[in-house]
Length: 263
Image (tube, rainbow, N blue to C red):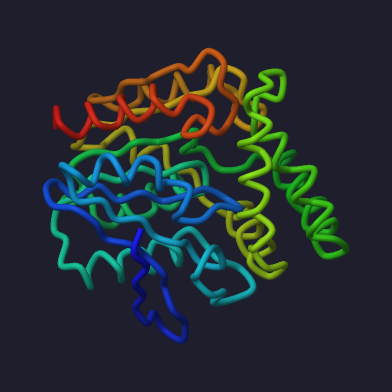
């Protein structure tokens, strides 16, 4: 994945752009980076155009402020898409990337050919989740390393032993996110608005990829969200936690490829 960058306000936004064909924009999740999509990009870019972007405060993209709102991250993503002169594209957003995708879709629905909500939700945080995020922020301020070591395994179905390697690989990526980057993302996710209405009125197809063993987002709730869209569908991964692109790589890649080809 060849890295490129553009200036956005006072910082650099890091991204990659490979292949030719339908444009598919991949947005990683919290503590991730564009490199998590490398196994997908290497294959999909042979037939399609694949854009991967480091979100604010992650990977090679700098922090912009103390709070990275979903709208601000979406603005940074849009800056890359405008730079690349993309008019129509598919969005694939994992977790945080899905929240950002919805914020982008709210402003640019005519540009979107399809949306993949990859272990992500259109709902805002409830009171308990907001409380939990504040507690986590206090932990991060004391020890980001402690937080990463505890948080990353919780993203996976740890009962499935082959995921151990994936956990260690994701930790390496997560450890590169600065304390400020972690806190800014947590603050932004805590304050995000409910966007179920975006799904309800989406003129494009929406695919939810859902992990039955996901400890972060209850799978039944996401199945319900998938039904909000007239063109909604879902894929339920029986043995996956919150990280289907690692835990069920072949199945999820096949689903995304089919989604792009069929739409």
